[in-house]
Length: 362
Image (cartoon, rainbow, N blue to C red; front, side):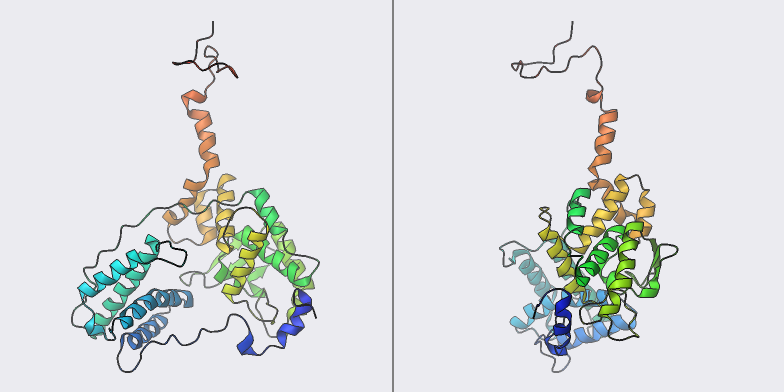
């Protein structure tokens, strides 16, 4: 029996839940006997849930704290009152010297995030009176770097990626609709997997994104081409994938359920790699490409900010720094050396090099 495409769906549904992809990770193995650092971390994460933080935000904070918990337990540090400023500075040095499996150091952004997570955790412990003094209060974060995002896909490269799914197969048609929606709207991966059928207004070509980053709703336009692909998926494919008639998720996996974000992310990465564009990335590369192409097409940056759901304009402004096309146009129009005055001769092709300024035409 085939194990790819729609022919694999029935086989996939025979799997028990524990054999499916995207399952919960096993226990982390940290010590939780008594008020240990790990046990207090669980309380802290529960507190964030109570404050209505998004699941993604809580998981991000968890990921920031896990390396510290592992580092501390390896050194016999199990309780919060054992942690001093000197110990945290030692952890900071460890982050600086740590090398990943590929031999590269942790990025400054990663180091700042992990230290920042620890600092927030200890500040919370003091508020809860679990500690009398905050050992992280005077820790200085590494200086942040202002780095440009990866280069966006060109229009030709986008079309190459979009053509990768096998649209003759129902699952390939579904994937094409997903990629088209990523490119058309710049939607985040976590936002797409939460979409419901009712979030798409086909008549007005609008997409209602519920509980986006920071639990903020927004409405974005959907391009005509993307809408056609999504409608074809809704008409021809979704009924084949649907097991539970009450399921409202827009894009269904082979199990008839919402996608696990990591599983969907790996699918997009694979399509980009298969297109041989030379780019590496996933769903976020489509988000970045959508914003860059809109800017190069003349869209006002504030409209792009609204489309992407950025809280601060400064976050969107990064695209003005990576869109080189507009800068090239301004350079060609305004730079004195680009103005071809009639009395200044251009260098003659294949002429021998001579020192000094270009000769003045007689």
